[in-house]
Amino acid sequence: MKDGIHPNYREVMFHDVSNDFKFITRSTIQTKDSIEVDGKTMPLVKIEVSAESHPFYTGKHKIVDTAGRVDKFRKKFGSVGSKTSVSTGE
Image (cartoon, rainbow, N blue to C red; front, side, top):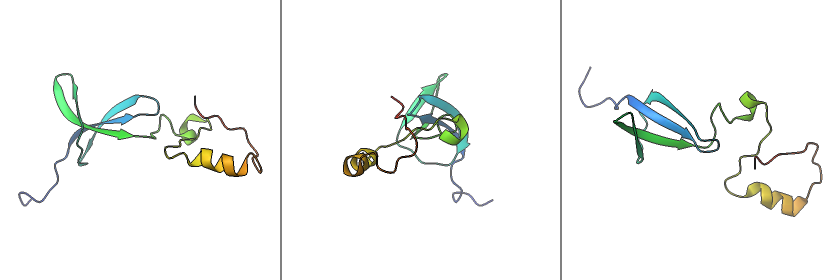
């Protein structure tokens, strides 16, 4: 293999901020954040959805809204056309 052309493949911690779930895997992703685990510093990647919070895997219908799009839609259209009750996860 040529030196200097391959990305750094190392352990990285992913943090699902929607339910505070953390897991460690290996990745080449570049991050600005880092965290110390068991005396070892590793890169930290904050994510909004993982298998622990995704409705497909949990079986719970939950809206993940970071930009206020759902509230804006509900103000504009109300509950017209809504066929299901939606929990906001609060």
